[in-house]
Image 1 (cartoon, rainbow, N blue to C red):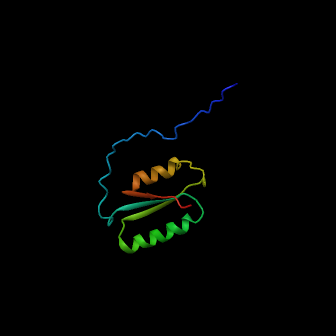
Image 2 (cartoon, helix red, strand yellow):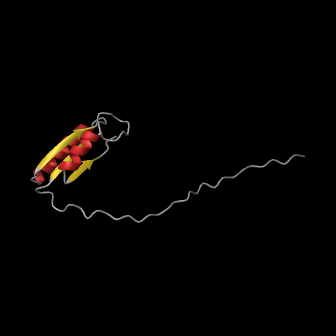
Length: 99
């Protein structure tokens, strides 16, 4: 008689923990130059417009900049021109995903 074997797999994964240093933050947003990234996902522009309105009611920014990704829904990084605009101008940049 032939013996049949079943391979049993262990579903428990192995994780690695890593300590990271969190940013101390920028404190009060008044007087800061703030950047927003529109990732082009459906309805994100609606969310972002409302978020900007609410933040402008609460804080007095030195200025704002809005960049919109050219490649929608692909996970492609922001292009270098827009990235440089944000890096050189902003104290803080808000980026999010709205699915």
